[in-house]
Image 1 (cartoon, rainbow, N blue to C red):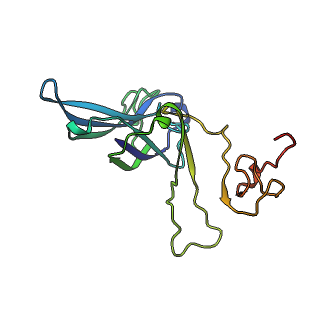
Image 2 (image 1 turned 30 degrees about the vertical axis):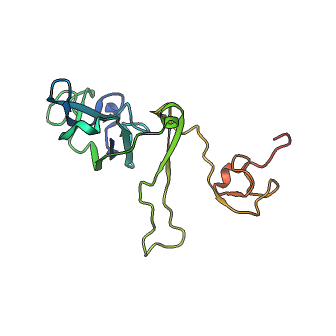
Image 3 (image 1 turned 180 degrees about the vertical axis):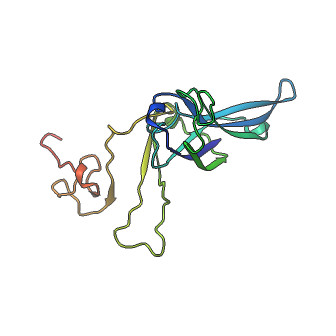
Length: 206
């Protein structure tokens, strides 16, 4: 099962130290051993989010995959937004709660997904998404850009920060050789490196 949403926060600085929030999806399954319905809960919270979960000021897509028993699936019982354990009180006097509007959750998506391959579960995998869409509109001007974000998982667990990971973007170009200006040793010959600040020329001994 694939669960995703966009999350944007406007949490005041003195509440950004700790607190529990996210979305909670409750799913009804048939228990074969008792032949009764049971409810299982799947959560995206601050522990599974990419980036600082208390400072998602530009709106970030968050997602998780969950292994479920598809053959005994009955229905979605509920999807809830929750928050608790924050310092102080909300504007309405609720202890540990945030104010209305401190967290904006949009573009909620819940769907079926194929099982992750073994290398994604036990090894290292990388996935890409485009927060602002993957196509330019008809009236797009020259120089317009669409950002691409990468998420890295090690043994199935999302890496909390990719700030220290170098990404090399390239396009196939047959005339790129080891001596070419835009050759990158990680991309290899025949690939032009597009992010100029990460271009690394071949060094002696490589």
